[in-house]
Image (cartoon, rainbow, N blue to C red; front, side, top):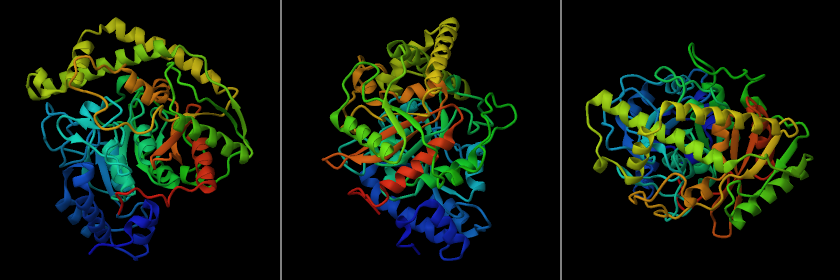
Length: 477
């Protein structure tokens, strides 16, 4: 039996209702599956279904004291390793082989009470900022089906925005949580490097670029999910300073008077859409009205050089992914098994020498020190999350031999997102603005390394001042 009011609640509220006996995990799972089946033909957000096992798990679930007791969860088809489900990275070259065991992250989700029941759409190998793979096809934005939900966690974002689940797994290597959050009107926190362990199979990815977390409709769900998953494992290469208190407590604590810098310029020199400028200026005004010290300022970095170095590291990562699959399966990679964009990055990555890769990482580390120094005089840095509203599906031709990661369509869209992957610092996208066409326009706050607490405090304050939870897309519930 479905629970009709399911989509009216965030994940923590549903978990509380399960613990208090107001609803059962089976009712929540039936509700999530019903909504998935209702909306997925339009959204193409879900690409693998594990409904029968999830229903059995929900029926056997013992609520206990878990924060998200019995709450349905979607896992991204990249790094969301769950025993019995395949992880294909949206790539036809990767076989649909069920994973033998959970990743540590998924194990922690389960201990927090979440019940995974399906996998979500992503771009091929998670590279571009839109979700349009050859294997699965395009995911669609519930606010406008002709628009992208962003990438690479686009399927997860579309599902949360449409009310299928309150929380969904994502990861972020160049904006892949924050970009979809901005496109779909959600909270998207990229945690500090190393905050969530990549155990047991990985130490880091691309020198620490990629981090794991969730997309959610409320700040408190994002905070509580981080409480459930944060913390290193033995052998992890990064050990951020532990938080002073649970992140969920931070979500309801007013921040101190913050020094917030803001910028509405594109660090790569391209244009920023007026909607994104307006969203940032309004956010700056809202922060000032809350008593924070706000000024226009920006770090002085060579962003053109950073973009080139970022592309070098990412290309090497694409080569790593494809060569690792070759080693594990014995299959030979050939161009027809990939989008042309991916194949070109693979060939580029194979030609990156060890010395070139290490030089790129060394220069990125130098730039990270410069960027970190900016936060000695500012607590937070506010910018547009994206340089454009959600792109139209098909705006980027991934079968063109000329398409690269540095194309202006992609760089002008993702703008300042990748710098936080380079530096390892946390950043959050918040849904504080919608344009005249009804599309969500996110704004991004970045903080010092290890300071998710300040981001969550401010996010909670702004959520109270300008609530977004009642905004619903045309594809909903």
